[in-house]
Length: 437
Image (cartoon, rainbow, N blue to C red; front, side, top):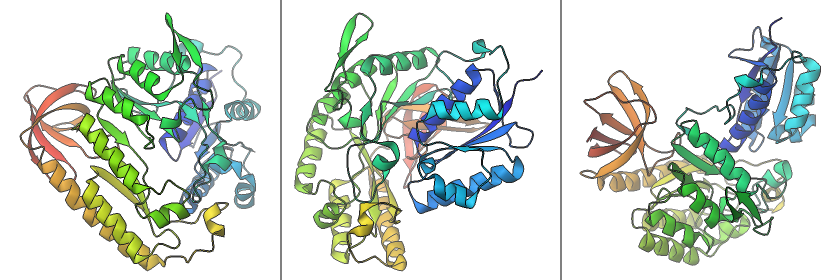
């Protein structure tokens, strides 16, 4: 008798991707096969995103496609926290669970497609099943969020901050290192708040106790011989200590900080820290400690009440601060968000579009200038893809999928996961071009 086959759709952010990896690891541990297509599978699991209306629509479309192609569908993830909207559109789904509810997902799978009597536990690698390339992996250090940004419903979907014990995180990281992972991307909703809910409690790791504290965790991860990249960090004062680890070469000189805006009034409406002069001082301090620090961020244009003056402040701040990498989103109202009840004037869609283009043009020029300064340098580069004569990698200043690439010319064969030195010969607005040394 063949093992049940499960087709899997993973939508949303890297944190949702980690949830998908954990579910697939549990499935494989119990002997289930993972099918690359819906047709012929025993059922389909759709891990949804429900943060923005566009993400909700994408999730609903994927559920509909799975129902058409297979007919037996289990829904999980952030949209699962609002089961009524799913049932209204797709009443025939087998089960709906919320985010991080792995046990309920497995119970629904057991009911719909019971596992074979003898699970093939030996088919699961020690590090679990990963959906990323073999040479990098996401490491989720906490769930939920205790911030209350007016545009965000993550706390409603995923609850307050729940940090993992440091020892558990480090054991997972060690398994990933042993499996050949060369780069760890540390993620959560608020990475710099790690451990606050645990009161920084210690937990055992090898022959010592390690605090559940951002600095302590970063230091231990930095001793594992992998690239360690920090995402979703807020500019709190204690982050200064982690910048010192970057200056020492312990972890990558890279911070992903969701600034969202630069206008104090817009930031207050977003219910985010609005003291940009303090943020500017902190960034200057970081660059004193670690001169080659790369900053990436995301911003929202068209938030309700945003004026032309607010937007000009944002553009001026971008040019003054010179963020290395920046993404921009046009504001979308989110059902259940506090921002909907602030009675602020909505920004017309055509104005959002125009501001988005101006933002991207401004940031493109900044990026082009920063990258042009790297021409002539020799940089460490991790190889992501090799396809014939095309070799594509990333410098230590670039995260996968969201940042730029380094296109490499090499005389000797290279493979994904190799970390090499590249002399930079040229640049454009987003990418670098160089020769392997």
